[in-house]
Amino acid sequence: MLELLKTIEWTPFILSFELAAVTTVILFTISVPLAWYLSETKARIKPFIEALTALPIVLPPSVLGFYMLVLLAPSSVVGRAVHDLFDVQLLFSFSGLVVASCFYSLPFMVQPLQSGFESLDRRMLEASYVAGKSRWTTVFRVALPNMKPALMTAIIITFAHTVGEFGVVLMVGGSIVGETKVASVAIYEMVEVMDYAAAHLYAAIMIGMSFAVLLGVYTFNYRQRYKRGGLYL
Image (cartoon, rainbow, N blue to C red; front, side, top):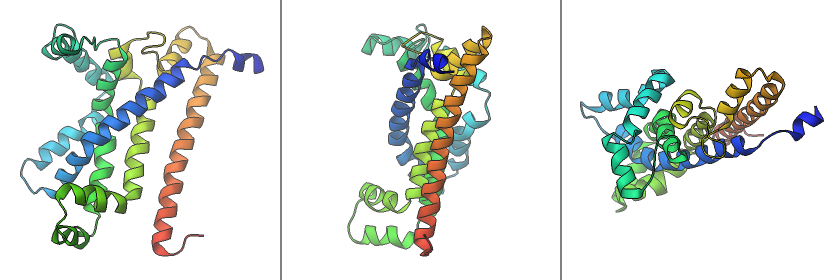
């Protein structure tokens, strides 16, 4: 076992966490205004936007991965424009993984934030407006600090979900060592060559990391809930 531990290549895990971190930051930036809009609006288009946002939850990763391939290909409008403007090749690159991950993990950031915004006391928000605060000052100075459980859930679940991605990242990024070979892809390749001992070890590391993340989320939310109720021990 000790010999096996020495053979662990940590690069796939580092890539997985880098991908998750970048994706989480980008999605937080995008999702806060989107979730705020969805929590406030009564427009008829709201169900359409909510359904479109939630689509990656029900779509098979192969379907989303296929359309990401089409969208990011060098021959597509998007792929060609990105290459011409920034000299970046999206397919089979870390940048392409980030784009694909943002699409795939979007609902895991938007939905908790939207629920958090909708659960806020409207009188608190109205008081902020009466005090002359702008809409975005109210969002960042009043709303977000008062919905910490939803905020932490959105950030950590998005991060954990991105770490565990497989189908989409494999189709868009392939398996380039040091570039797109994340932990889930590394495990898949070990199983393909029947290196079950290494696959067990890598999978156990992923299980431990994922459990630790989820335990952190539930512990934080538990403490916040009981602090508010005055029952936290």
